Length: 387
Image 1 (cartoon, rainbow, N blue to C red):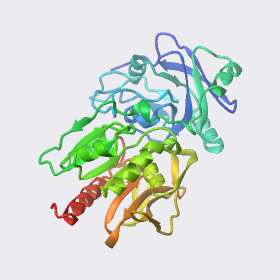
Image 2 (image 1 turned 180 degrees about the vertical axis):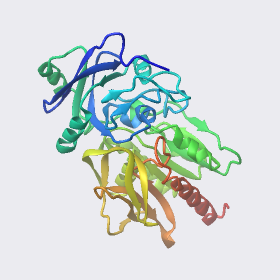
Image 3 (image 1 turned 120 degrees about the horizontal axis):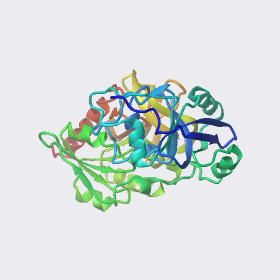
Image 4 (image 1 turned 90 degrees about the vertical axis):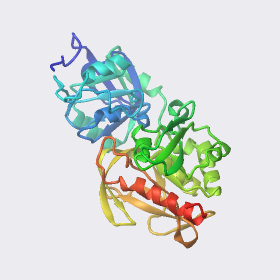
């Protein structure tokens, strides 16, 4: 299935970082101009899942793998109903797509959705620069090819720190994913930018998942009679998520079992009394080593986050709902990757992880966390005499 590498003409493109460094390349996807936070993803595969992950909203993603596009684009692997990245930067765009499920090329899909891409960029040098100097604002353009003029536009664009983006990505109305097979539990999932695979992983375990807008109230959650509550991944700065943090404290007050992923982990940290902070360049990819401090096992995991929870890793902290403790740590840099809350008798009342156990795309080492959620809900039901 041969495809042209670029549109009919090789249109030049310019990439400029906010510190003034710039790179020239060739346009693919849509032509135009885009701005966002420059971040890099270390996954060697799974670009379709990456581009459709709402957590990448307002970010220009740089692929560290040098060869991108060889599997094309299919209609099964999207993690939402659109591409969310602000732009895509690659070294070598594949001249052909060869996967048997491919329906069209990456170039075609980016053009169809109006997403600006740039290829033939030295992504190794660009990634090393971001590792040294940190994630920063960036502009990519086929319209403005003068670095200084594009830099002025970059410096006028919004920063990620302080950005509240949940309203841009959450559902407007509740949606339900039915349980696969026998229904065992009901879960209220607060959508902060949820990936489609997450409710599917729960449904596989007999959970009926009600995906709710981020503006939902505790009364709306209680109306569902849920066995547990889930807070999803999502974009933006968790320090701005005051409404969501208040909702989670109400969930904990109601003694509802809680599970959170990524942004949900950061909100859980805030609800427990911890702070959050922006990482220098974040963790993004499908090859991050994390240790589960409960089992002492090391997992290779999928990540996409630029913020983290600031919590002590060597001691428990008393909260109004029980003892909170760090449950997972990143083995590359020691960043907190998970939290757990235990009540009387050390019963697990809530837990969260900073990474993506739904594994789309990515390894399946952390799939057991969905089973841990099921076990927690079953134990809570039994303790309340509803088994």
